[in-house]
Image (cartoon, rainbow, N blue to C red; front, side, top):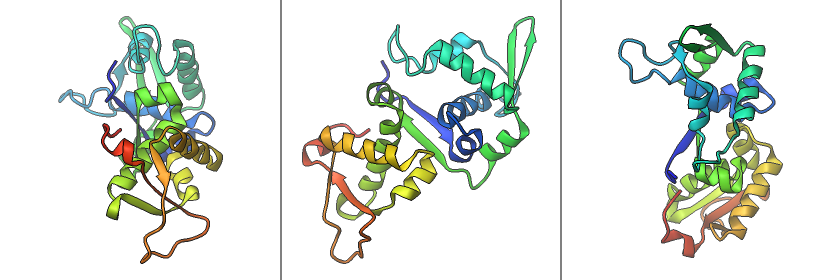
Length: 209
């Protein structure tokens, strides 16, 4: 089990994909970058990948993964149907190519990339893993370790989650003793609709997600 493995997706791609946009964006990102380290091919080039290989990317244990093989197969079929992914068979297998529109979003200089921990997603749920990554990064890069004036609306927009999912994830993290509500620094004007959060003192000594 690789507890440090992270998955990535493009926020704009997830938005374009609509329903089940996050899993679709994760897979499109994987396929697009499959040949990134091959000098003669590079990112965005046609990628010959088996269903077993794609499924393996999301394995947490030998027997279980974040997404089952059937879910991954259905997602690939949906991406092909929507025109976001092209799949061609040859004698060696299936070759996938993301659509020009998807490639343009991934390559954009303004692309917003979201990442989350695979194991956290498997144990707590994808939305908790995404919010956890986002909040802990914000907290650890804020003055005094307090992330203030956090906008649920903005978090939902960037991460492609609903406000309800954001709130549920925050409550889950509070219940697990990962974060806690904090008083907004006195010099900062606080909106009544925004949040101030910090790490729980007990969690600060542990490994950061």
